[in-house]
Image (cartoon, rainbow, N blue to C red; front, side):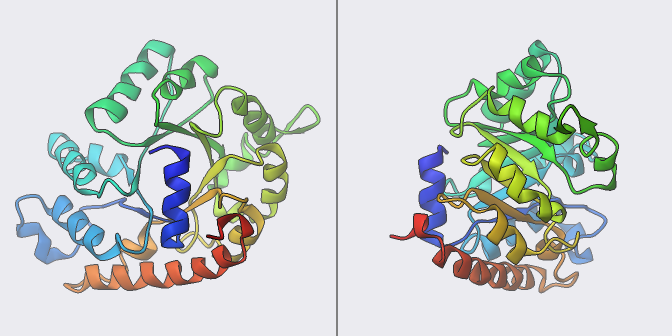
Length: 274
């Protein structure tokens, strides 16, 4: 999915909601465990209940990799089940020497046909470059994250600014606004003004709203640009809204509430007006 298609989807749905399918087999409703593929069955029902309200799905690959071969199969079936109208993200946080990153890119863009993959930039340009060489695909590079460990490196002084600022400025020159996004945690809302100065036209994937304490209003007001420019991810708040047989319906209700709130912020964005 290219940028124009993504923006049109956001404009048409009046939503920039990304649902995180970070599916932990230990947390899904017990009645699903008798299914042939419990993880896929859970994802399938959540997708059916939320697809009307979101524009994207993010699959955190760790929850699938932990299950071995059957987890990879569930992930493959899940990404194939997601409608082609939705932007798909492999939250894999890959990044290695060039020839290894090339294989990671091939795995997620060719074999599994995701639209985007999250990438760690620590090893430099050659570790990110292979993800930027696929037309219509995206590298979503870690910029400023929500975890406590962000203090260890990202928020340390580097030259005249902070280390994360150097990362964003440097990485921005490796790709374009058509193939490069940044992960910016919702709990770092006060930094968004500065981040928009560094990367005014890029899209941001914003995790951390909901269970991690990020505020949708703050993020929307501080981070949106004329093309919206943000995908706000919600995982636990949506997919674990209920642990009972009504889990899918409850997930749909939460997704709908967030979508309706997003409508109000989109309505104030002149760039997204029809």
